[in-house]
Amino acid sequence: MFGSPQSHGANAYAKVGIETGVIAASPHKLIVMLYDGAIVALSNAAQHLKNGDFAAKGHSISKAIAIIENGLRASLDKKAGGEIAVSLDALYEYMNSRLLQANLKNEVEGLHEVQGLLRDLKSAWEAISPDSKPANVERPIPQQDPLAPRRPNFFEA
Image 1 (cartoon, rainbow, N blue to C red):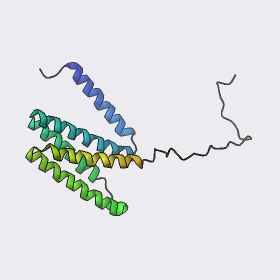
Image 2: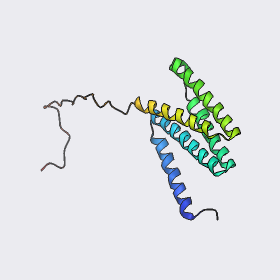
Image 3: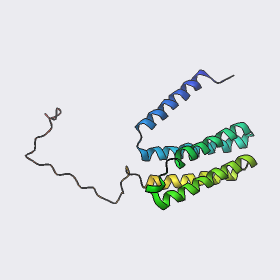
Image 4: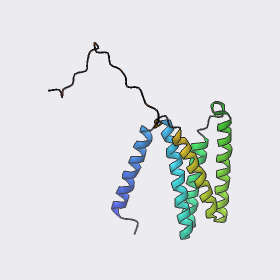
């Protein structure tokens, strides 16, 4: 009636995985995770709207708004980020406004519009990741000093 014990176990396992990912993530990765969370929340909202579950739709939209407002928008540093941060702030404000309108009018188009904007921003954010390396740039191989002490290798014959 309220879900199987397996689903509760799977949900708990997923929650632990997410929490572990957040703890281990770089600040750059955390922003990607926020984008992912908002995108998923909007996918859920669209599905709930399609199914006529308006309470769940409202909950999912509220979750997306909270991620945008309290995560993405709150993390902006307008002094250090300059014009880009100011533009992102305005875009996040527009997204929240659009989501409120989509929620009130039960418009799936608004959900898809904001979801598309979030996907574009996520792609751009991933493209500038400090962890990613351009495919066409060769990294120099560090040269070792032949006279420097070597670390012991216990696998040598």
